[in-house]
Image (cartoon, rainbow, N blue to C red):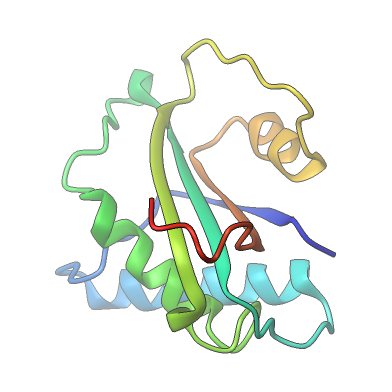
Length: 139
C-alpha cells in the first residue's frame, strides 16, 4: 500500500484565495480525487513523509503567479485528513516542489500515477505519501 501516490489534475487554488467558490471547488476536487485513489483503506495512523510536486505550464503564462507554495499545499493537506491519514499532525516530513511541465526530467521508476499526470498534458499536483523512514533523525 505504501508508498502511495496519486495526481490531482488542475490548477491549484491557494489557501486564502479571494474566490471562495473556486477554493471550495478545488478542495472538493482534491478530496474526491484522494478518496477515489485511496479506495476503502482506513486512514493511516503512522508518522508520515509527504511530498507534493506542482507541475505547471510556463508556456501558458502560468509561472506560479500568486501561487505561494505554502498556500498551495494547505488545502491539499487539509483535504487528505480523514481520507489518507487521520490528521495532518502525523506529517513529520514535508517536501514541497514546483516544476515546469516543459522542463527536461530524468525520472527513474516512474509510478503509474505520475505517468498519468504527464500524459494528461495539463497542470497537476503529484502527491506521494510514505511512512517516515527515520523518525529518530533530527535532520
